Image 1 (tube, rainbow, N blue to C red):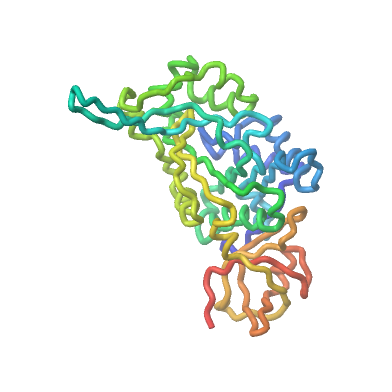
Image 2: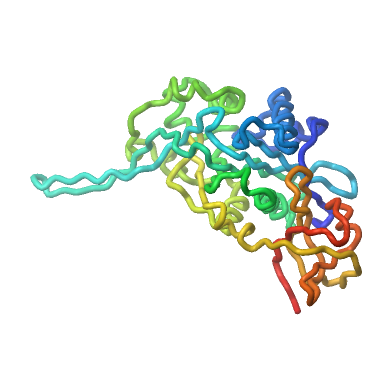
Length: 346
């Protein structure tokens, strides 16, 4: 049952579990490279972010772990990066449409082109959403995804007004990306896996050094590359739907390696944030068919915790939950929590 899961900040001793998730995530999941020093560094950065040890709040990188509260097993993760392009470039291809016409030839046409950009500097990024296969379903994916927005709502000043998410593009089981094979390989002279690894472990200067600086006409690319521009990996379809449900829209921007889509939204318009509310929580008995379901967090960024909600809203507006839920959130009866209600029956 998904209600046994709790989302919590990553800890420095999560390295073994994070390595396992990285190995399971597969090729092209850039934010989870199978590289222990890099992952250990990310745990350290996350630790500093949660305790507020930052020279610049835009450097905050918050990694959340999904834990099975019954067994202690780490079954997934998700993350929020306060500011992209702050400590290293954040390159993408923007898809632009060029309109050309000739009166002499009595001809007019529109043609798409790819232009290398670094225009999303300072955007907050949500990503690193991954769950072990056997723990997907029943609301677990929603918990991992929506908890990122409840984290942002707990301390909005730490995050940007604009939010983006990158989705992994089309890559086959052998780690081959049609977009890369038809475009990137010609400039980088390396396999997709190697380029993807470099983007995860370097400052991305190699992209600026090797990538073409002129527009690339989409119609000149082979059909197998054109067909995958802006499409996400089959394993990312669910995440894409959740992002669309939140209000994210395709920004006509794609990943430079695999052509996967980049989607954006204004933070204040993100559905989970808009619909979340603060309530006082009380301990008590909850009916077997809980009248109020959704997601609940302790609304404390530094010690953030969230889980699926099962409770009852009283006429006073207070929320009644079982003691076990308070224990998972590490809050006491009478304290304030943040909830997103999926369904309310009266």
